[in-house]
Length: 306
Ligand SMILES: [Zn+2]
Image (cartoon, rainbow, N blue to C red; front, side, top):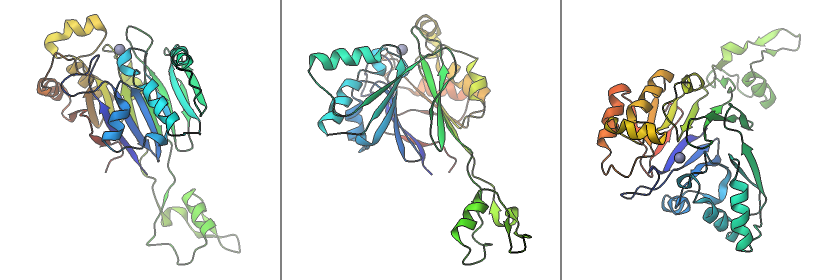
């Protein structure tokens, strides 16, 4: 079952050195979801040959332009490509008004329903409850209401041990085994004891997206055991004052959160345009949390352990 994150943009505030503003595509159990939608997101989707028309959920962390200005263009393209099925948008208060004005003056009536979900950003809330996973908000500390998003797989069924299963066992009995039941014979006695014919379920995994935020230690509790953590790292340690002033984080602070949460992998992004090269940010983070990677445009990261 798929659980991948593809980076579409890693730049903070303004595009710089070929880096695009924030956007990521999540492929989770074959649902495609977008997290933030900075300017140029639809071009990035095309560049990496990703299925724009299959996106059904778009999560916007906050209404600073570098996190949503790609949205009007993306919606317009979906419209021109004759999208008909509904699209869910999640955002703090205001996005609906912005889009309404946009489409009012262009006299565009989108030919697909847009369902707006307004987020309150102060408390963790489950905002999407899918058959196989949930998405919940992560309250962040920024200059305007802002939240991250935690994608959490639900518990998975046990796995059939194909080497042990008697040949020709009917399908409904396989399903019962997967669901953890024993299989009884005609006399009502246990015939196939579940644990002898199944293997434990695969691990359920988590991906967290945290941008934009000042260092916020309260995050750790919610992020405990996260497999892959994306945390903004706008500044180097030398520019920590700037980070405090603008309510962003340094690479070391991002790494500190990853270490305390016990993440498996940390992705850092949302880099300030003052850094042409990102090596310093990577090295600073790796001093605290070794398994850190740059969230580089076009890179895809597995959230499930491979
Ligand atoms: Zn921001």
